[in-house]
Length: 188
Image (tube, rainbow, N blue to C red; front, side):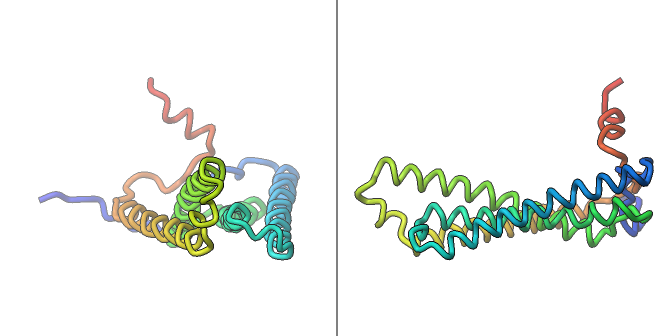
């Protein structure tokens, strides 16, 4: 009979910015915040421009607005936690938060890949079949392609998260900075 370490962890402790002086943490916070706000602003601007302009009601811009929405959500899954951990002394993330963040991150990343493939097919149809383009890429087809992308990505990420969190976490619950992790994984 196999015995596993069933120690229950409350979460993980992130060491990424814990050793830096406070003024550098504030600078990092402001840099991340500015990049986050610029990302949100430009993507919202793209979505609004496509919704307002009737000439942009084509499949290409439909897919671009979906990519802009994915970019907004993608950055929102990670950056707010980074901003909180940058300035606070509590650099931990609970197991539930980690699972939810992992799920959304995987879903959005996979959906982005599928949408880029759909956009490649859209450009192929526009270039190679210009006379049939409107029948090939109808509004209904575009909506179905986006729905299949989202649905398959959601199911894929659920499966990955479920299998990941069924594993036992028997090592340290401290997550080192990227440089320390890279040096710790080098072969001797």
